[in-house]
Length: 153
Image 1 (spheres, rainbow, N blue to C red):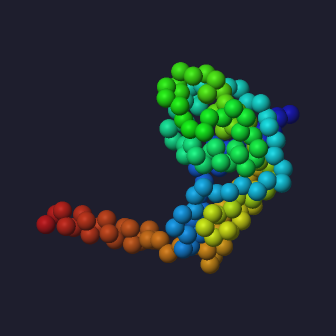
Image 2 (image 1 turned 180 degrees about the vertical axis):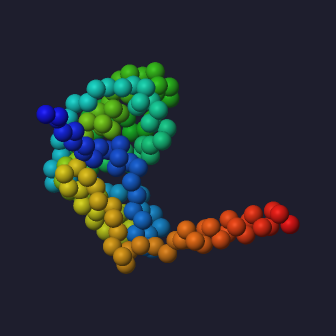
């Protein structure tokens, strides 16, 4: 019998999510309201953490760690030469990979819209009235066709 792999929302995931509710100009960073959280040890991979750090919004990560009371020895900012500082990388790993939100909400900082987290899975789906009026695929296609026509002339 195969074991089930259960994925939980980690702070790495949280750092990359944003609210796209209609009319919201700044839907990042999402606040976290936790009803259930676990700390689960995960094998340390310094190369992975080193590659992820430049992609993170560090201030948002630190604030999320503060709100969950898991800051520990996490630095308030990315240090110089972090790739060669194993202590820094291990602390970043702990906060990014070992903190798991099982149940709660992600909250849009502008609209206050709550996105539920159930069984470690954030549900970022919008209701029909919350979806923005962005360009449609057909309008993007017609613009691309017009650009092609312009180049041909």
